[in-house]
Length: 165
Image (cartoon, rainbow, N blue to C red):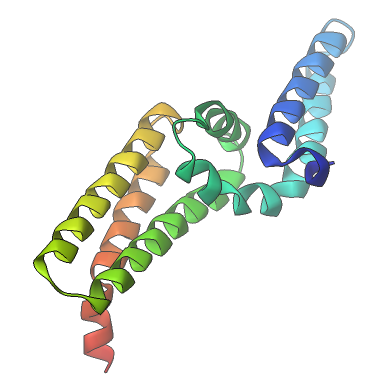
């Protein structure tokens, strides 16, 4: 179903399904049974598709702010689970990949205009990821730390390459 709907629509569908099932079962089950039903739904709807969902994270971040609701919902899904680590790693990987792509463009031409454009793009990347952290990920510490680590990683990439050579 995720392939048919696409990740953004599937996330919305999954959350709507959980909300409907919650309303239907809340009054009929004891709390422990109710929580198990919700956990089972989350497992089937999201955890089993986590790779596909996380793989689309770069697309959602690039589409920010149009993807705010999808990113908020995704965070809501993973916030209280071990999947937060996967989201954090994917967030960091997005930053590193975007930064390395910018670095590769700057290496080919070291003129002043290219360097100036590079700095602007780095600032835009930082501002976009800051906004995603604030607007969608509740400035969660694990994600903020991943952001810092990712920026350090790609900004120091050239130095690490020089030392290894």
